[in-house]
Image (tube, rainbow, N blue to C red; front, side, top):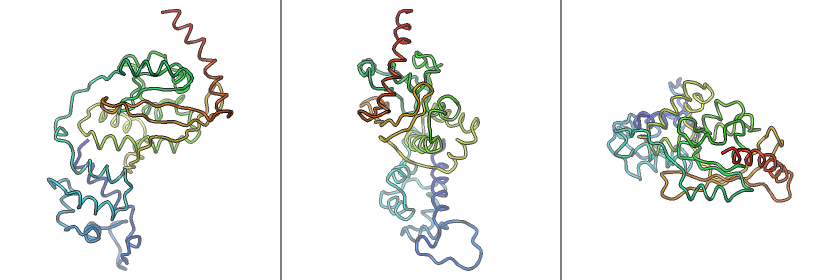
Length: 293
């Protein structure tokens, strides 16, 4: 992913989303060539010279101050996530020109021990690209019982939850509101891509999904940006039915963006009963797998 090009596309998408009347500009009666704000209109409202803004949008500005980027963000009415993304794109890391070689990550021994101890809580460890590095028995049963339980152990078979969301029918069917989940997945991946433009494996993932899935490509082209660290997901599990599960994303310090995701149900709820039933159903399989080793 080319940072200057990404910056220009992002700014253009946000300019196009604002009508002149939204920011107090009365449109000229003659036909406009753009659907949203013109460059000169945005520059004027932000208090930035049109030359500087044009160079920024074209990726030719060597640097941009916080004050300039903040003014542009306010004018475009960017969210906090979008404002952070703007700064990531405007000031890429020094290594962005030299994509790093792919590196297979592993979940630490302590993270695996924690997953095993969470026997009644579905949990998994993801890297920043959303590759599954490890999961516990219940996490596997909840999200990917159709895959081998040891699939995260090898980079060649390791599941990626974003790829599965768009290309794996079984995983996709879990989400009762797939469209919202897909939009969030693309928006969070956009945020990570802006922070790590030098990540070759992340670029390859985006390229694969863009080529193989029109639904992903159309969402990616709209440049959504959003992070989500907690919330509630409604899952329709093939064995135990519909469950409303709260989730938390917990960043693992010193791990280059790895995070632990855990799911819980409200105590005494039908979802908690369904989760316990799923745990009971998965237990014999886990015991059988252990006995065969």
